[in-house]
Image (cartoon, rainbow, N blue to C red; front, side):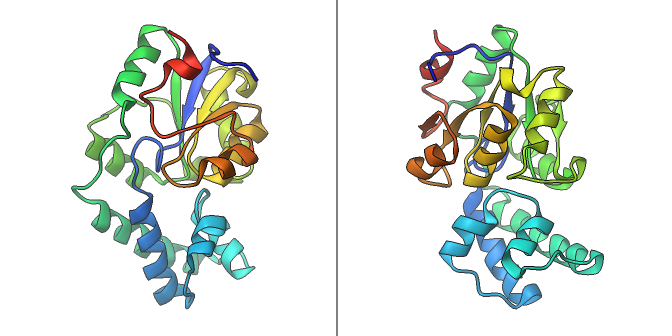
Length: 221
């Protein structure tokens, strides 16, 4: 895999990619899993089962059983509400993001959001980061039937840009997210905001970087 490379489009995860907010999600998962699911999550659980994916699939990974509608609704409301409480006023964009988006726009390279988050959390995040409607093309958790690590989210993200996923670059931070993007055929530049670089490369990333300040490494000057 050679770099730099000009993609036809760029697909961005949100949590851990646009903003380094994973600590808030992890704390919310630990608190609400204890009260609603009766589970005491370890760091290993968070690393291997929680990061990357939609709530129903994560609950299934943790419990071995897909949640019914009542449990899922109760858990989702509690966990995402707690996440927003923890993150309120503390969200910051990952270094270099705004400048990177400006480069993509100047080069006429379209981009899309591909996230497991729901509409409420996406609106919360975009407002907190001052991005407004900048990511006009979006794939949210409720838009897919199979979440990350399945390739469906990134296949759909590319399709919504009118592109084949194999022509797109994806940015992810979680092992399951990298597996989803790579499985869809995307090239992946992963951010080490959540998982170690070695784990992201093993999952299928072509590069693992700390932030967006080194965009010329993969996009070229």
